[in-house]
Length: 322
Image (tube, rainbow, N blue to C red; front, side, top):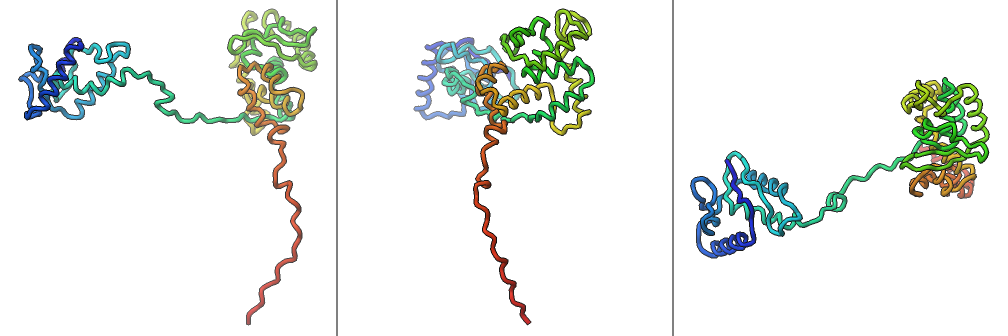
């Protein structure tokens, strides 16, 4: 069937409908009476709107969903523009019934919905990274086959760089006079400086003498483009298999190890590590406090504070019954 809607409900029409509804409600009349043969009310008079056609729950739900999609919260507080007709099978609704069914939706059209407040979301799992020990980092880097890949991964660990930042380093970013590395347009399109380790400087100089890169410090197959992250990650997976380490190892694992090893050694505070890692929020950096063995994990257990138990004599054996 076809549901016929008026092109627009104005204030006068709504007031007339309400008045006719309460007038008809006060009189003794059969509320199950229908409208004309076509199943919808006419537009000649107000009484034509007072016919009520009973409908099943399926038709009502379909109508409410359709009306909810069509309402505009910026429109009139009453009803907004509605589509002229809607095809549905099996049931008939006149215009007055459509209006009565849409009244409960008027309050919802004016509400400013906040998804997080009105619909609770499941909690996101908070996971801590698995940290490699210094010995495991050294063993893993020794299992990387190609020199270029080994230098890139060593740079990630020595300076705490993301893999996307390490592969896009330029030769001019290495400042041996100030012993810093300039990271240009890292995550969040921000520049920052990180420390340049003397050992890393020797490794980079040895690599530069062997490769002689021009623009990019770690070029790819073409000299005018840097090496891709996928190539380094593939080399990392291969080195992980060769190393036989049970812990998961990715290029980002070396960045985690950089932060935790700095905390454990006591050479840097959380605020300094935040600047080195390029974190916008200090909360992101403080998660490493839960992992560093020199911080939370170094707290003594109350079991170790208990006195030694006093040795007691073994209980006597129960008597033997004959």
